[in-house]
Image (cartoon, rainbow, N blue to C red; front, side):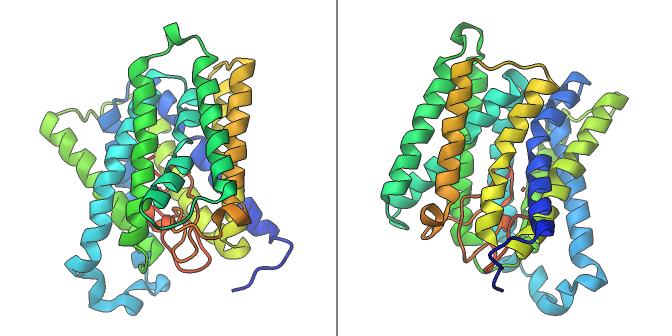
Length: 342
């Protein structure tokens, strides 16, 4: 449906709320680690709880989902693609949370946001879209920004494995976006989001059971952080973004979603007491400028890479949304991040 020149303030508020939720993810993860939660425990609880809530919303009588899809919803051809994407999403999320366990949240988030540029390069190499002047400029800004973020800090104190994990997460999420573009293009975004999150939950629960690495005897602090991560930084932002995108359209929703790394860096500085060198702030600003350039009308017009939000009107998704949001019919955004991986 057409959207007015002036965005609906309710939609703007919902998209910003989604960005805040996703942006707080790193802070909740850090708090959970401090309370004694392990990565397998944190991710198993996060995705299991999120999957339960999303399926409950999807299957409630008022949603009309079963009435629209009938038996087709339970066929392997309908379930397998989303669940398979969940496996890839689980690998990406693992890399991201390993990075958060070893380096500052602000640094990890800025490194992760190299993925939009990687998506553009990948799409061009695959012949899905052209490298326009605007995209080349965005690539240059993003590259210079990432270099400044890394080199301006004290490299002797930076955990190399943490940096590698953050960069790997960016590469994996870029690949996830490119794959989900073709796998879920004609499917209901909320359903795919639920499937992706379920696939990730099965991976983490299976790994945790096999390795006996899931420990539910967490401190009260760890439980509050873990539950907040599952609800406030997974389910709520997914649903808020979907509704917000319906009200303001994918272009405006995409621009608003670039607030996510700003939120993460801001919270990391205020809540966690992290510090960035002045030059690193400049690098972060260049990364954000590249995001805005890619998300703008010229940057996103012919992008065959849908965000974690919609399908049919591709965009660069937010970093922690799952594929369902990346795939949706005309105007809409994420379900499930969920890009998540994160």
